[in-house]
Structure formats: C-alpha cells, structure tokens
Length: 487
Image (tube, rainbow, N blue to C red; front, side):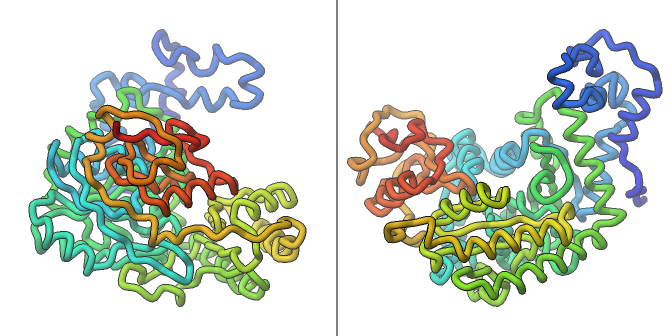
C-alpha cells in the first residue's frame, strides 16, 4: 500500500507534542528553549529549541509504538525507489562508515574509487579492510577525475574476485556521472553489491534532466546528503538499500553501531520536510533551477578566459552525463588560481562559492536560487574576467596534473595509521609511507591515504598548494611543514 507523500510524520509529531502542553522533566536540558539566554536566542531563536525534542516520549511514546521515524523513512524509501531508507543525523560521513561495514569484515578487500571522500577512507580504517583502489577516468582538458569506467571496474573484479563489494562516487564533486547501470550489472555478474556515495545526488530522482540516481540504476546501497542540494539542515543524510545482496538485518545492526542514540528531531524533521517538498513540488522546483543553470552557462560561455564545464565536454566511459546544477569553471586562462578568484569574488561581490582549487571554481544552484541570485553570480564572474591583471604580479604557478598524483598503496590504511610513526619535513617525505590522510578541502578527496608511498609529484603539489592558499583540514600538521609517516 502506497503511503501519503503529503504527510510528514516527524514534523507532525513535533506539532502534536506541543499541542499536548508538555512540561518536561528530562533531556534536553534547555527544556524547549526556556533555559536559553537572550544573547543566544537573538541568534538561534527559541522556536528552534522548541522543536528540539527527544525521540522517546517526545516524537513518539516511550516504546516507539507509533513508529513515527519508521513511517517517515518508509515514505522516503518509496519516493526514492528503495526497499529501505534510514535517516542519519551524522552526515554522509557516518553513512560512508555504514556502507563499508555493511559489506566487509576486518581483513576483507573492498574495491573503492580513488577519488572517494576522506570519510570512506576513515571507514576503511575503522573496519580494517584492504582497499583496492579503482582509478577514475581522467579528463586532460579539464585536469579532473571523473567516474569509474565499466572497464576499470571489470578489471578490478577480475583481479580481486574475493572483494566483498565495489564503492564508487556518483555524481563526482564536479557533477559528473558515470554509467551506474553498467557498473551495477558488472558487480552483480560477480554476485557482489555496488555501493554508491551519492552524497551530491540527493536531488537526482526528482527531475528528468538529471543523471539517473543510484537506486534507479540498480545499485544495492547509496547515501545522500540532504543538506547539500536539498532543503534539510546540516548533517542530514539518508542511506538507501535495495535487493538481497546486503541483508537488511546486517545493515540495521551496522547502522546502529554509528547512529547516535539521541538523534536530532531538528535534523530528522528537516529530512522529512524536504522529502515531502520533493514529492509534492520537486519536478516543478527543479525545472526552474535547470532553466536557470542553462541561462547562466549560456551567459558565462561568452566571457573571455573563463571556461564552463558542459555536457558536451564529457568524452570518456566514466563520464556520460553532467548534473546541470553544478557550475564548474576553469580560470587557468585568466592567469590566476581558483583560490585567488574565490577570495576576489568574496571580497568584491560577497559571493561564497562551493569550491576553489588551484584552477577551478564551483557554483552550486539549488531551489533557493532565482533570477536575482544568478544575476549577481553572472555580474561577479563578468568582473572577475576583467580583474586578473590587477590580482597577480608574477606568473601563475604550474601544478602537477591530477593524473600524476596517484601513489602506490603498500600497507593497509589501518596498519599505517596505528603503527609506529614519526614526523618528517614535507620536502624530505618523498619515498616514505604516509601515516595520515591529507585532503585538500573542499572537496575532501585525499591526495594521500595512510599506507601510500609518497611521490615527488605529490610533495610538489602540496608545497605549491599551501603556498597558493590551499586548505588541508585533516593533516596532523595543517601547515604541511611536516608529514606523519611510518617510522
């Protein structure tokens, strides 16, 4: 029996709770915002705290007999086309941990796309699994790593038929999608599941102009960040499962290992509301965004020195479609770095972009955007193309290409991270085995994974990156003056 997608069980439970006239003598300690001081409430309104109620004897009764969260998750699963869906309040980082442990035990092999997020590497460390890295297709014109090709995955299964599953990123941080249907078929031919980090694709099921979603493509497990492209609060994520290759009981047990026992009603309610909005108005809302994105691309393509990634630029098996709401720019021809461009746009036009790296920028469009917001983006980018001569006095640095930044994995990440280590100067680290993750952020894709042998190209990339403004979030020495290596 189909559920009523106009319902929002969690939001309705919050409303019902307040109608009951509660006088709580239990957590949370702010007690519906009554304990919150005025300076805090002037920034975080008390109405927000009033919606922050516990799941037991709050959203539901003390035995969860109303199944409020289960009903909300069932509606999400039905809308997305999954067998089951679970709401995560720890972001898709937790969801990545769940995905790995749902298929692998300590010592097992797992095929993992090398352009995965740092949270997937953390999952490999927690699970003490052996990652077998799949090399994504490389785009020389754009110096970008796209998706994993069917041939690369096929080769991975041929070399490692004992791997417990394959994990790919789709769409990529830059909005590029691979042929997920073929990837799923290849994995299923080997009787193994395909797991998809779809953090950037929560919106894909809701408009025909978008690439096919993981569930629609036959993937067995996927995760979506509902705070990235949808309307939910930060840390909102869902994990979707279908088929029989990942047993539901195994998945639930693993999920419970990571999910907090005090899930936020604010975050879960925002997921519930976002799902309802997509069910009732999703195609209409995203249709407007698709039109806005097309107009922005058409306008910006005429700006000298600025390149805009288009679907026609995708020419490899690992890159067959482009998410139109991600606007990826290359500023190389302007003679500046993406870091400089990002800082200039913030200072002069108050534009805060999703990503800047040594040569790229990303602007993300969502259902919050309209003609006015994109007009400001266009104006800022137009002025940027005229400003570089005033930004840099010296020649733009030449960075090593992404295709030259791969390293050999000679130890498992867990062995390297937890073994005997020391710190050495970055300049002296070539040839050593790294014992930490080093991820330029955003996008949070590691350039070094614990257990990899450091190359000269990677050292050069990191040195130049820090000098030019790259931010590294996870290294033990954030200045990268030193690296933690195996002793």
